[in-house]
Image 1 (cartoon, helix red, strand yellow):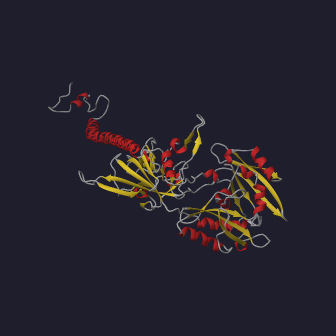
Image 2 (cartoon, helix red, strand yellow):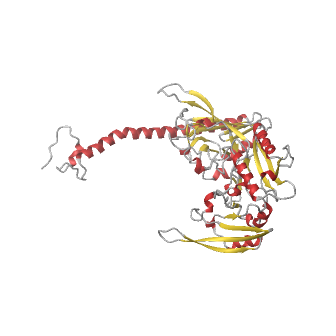
Image 3 (cartoon, one colour):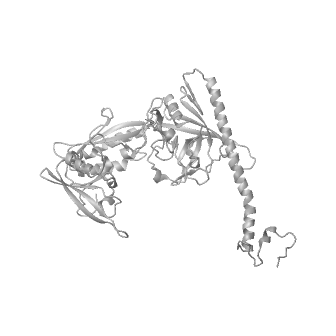
Length: 512
């Protein structure tokens, strides 16, 4: 029997089967809910579509404005030796200022911010503050043009953990929309750090400036032409909020991507329309010839003729990278006082550490513990090891590496003993026998090591990338640095990552 319909009843219900269900088996109340949701959601979807279209129109307009400015600047400054004109960019050598035309992104409210600034072709607008209509290589060219020299980006494989270089001050200027509908805009000009909140503090990032690391140029294997890494890398970063190896401008402190991801969000104190035009200015932090980076060498050597068994037996000196000594006295306190003086002068001490041959491993560990305590964004920054030297963190290994069952990989183990100056060395290869549903069964394969060449050749012959290209060394406290390095010297050529464990303290039974 055909259902009777009251006047005005929704015609969609005519698909009913007389049992209160649609022909697709959907109950009438649920079907009504779906219909109402669709009708209510339609305006919202249309509004979203309108926002996207308006944003794209705004971005197109901002691009056009940048292109117009570029053409006007080409004509205006033709033949000028003190003005550099590039698409989306104007650099003034005399004022040492760079002007960059850009646009705000369409960043969502709670999106993590990984980049302050990206080029227009980056594709990272969903995690960046702003877009520049200039290429990363043009930003680099402009920074050089106004007298800055690029520093060096991070490279964890080469033990470069700190972005190094002079700092640049980046300012963003835009017409901030009113919080009230139809209200007047307000011209804003703030440091770019102010636009980002740090989730650890709930405050804006401090105005430290950004480090001009400079990315780098490399040869394109396909064409043989030189290409700028930041122009073609996945990130295409101009300025990043984490330590991006290929960026032009980096944070002035250690900020590994995985460690700071989702910590940085947009500061709600500032507002932007989707893809509205912005103007960025970039200037050197110091304009009078002063430099932020200070390269120093800390040398620790044994006093007298015997080995240095603890820090009280060690003499210290601090020198510039050219070898000119600058510290007064040979105490540890005088070395630390020199670092403090450099910091107070507004410079960052990048310190290379040289261990003397007669230092005991016990004394070196004590020193490295102290160095780790004074290394920070407000302290010293320790450089990769000098030629023939070990990185200071080699003497501060993660304790978990002692436990074969808990560590995530099985590195080579080198066990050393010493008797009357004679070193006995045993290399251990840890093998894992995996069975489904059970922890791996571990077994050892031991090799007696004759000398440095034998150690390096044996490891090379049995190279296994699963071992992390690392060596864990167990050595006596009294062994000298010279004895240790003479054995590791050849192996370090391919495996700079070394972890050195000293015997457990007999009283506390804890690793030192």
